[in-house]
Length: 54
Image 1 (cartoon, one colour):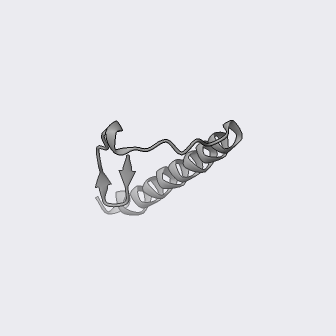
Image 2: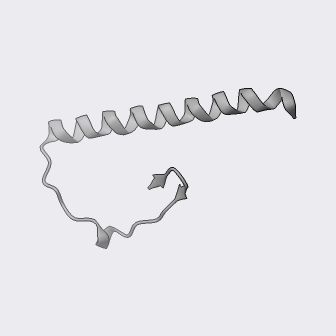
């Protein structure tokens, strides 16, 4: 599990079943993928901004 300020480990015991439908799981996966891609793009953009200064 990743957060803005670092990475955290979550035990399976701390998770609870939410009984999502298959379509809801797919929708959540899409949202997660978009967030991940957006975060990667922001990191690349930041690197491109500072790399000429290095």
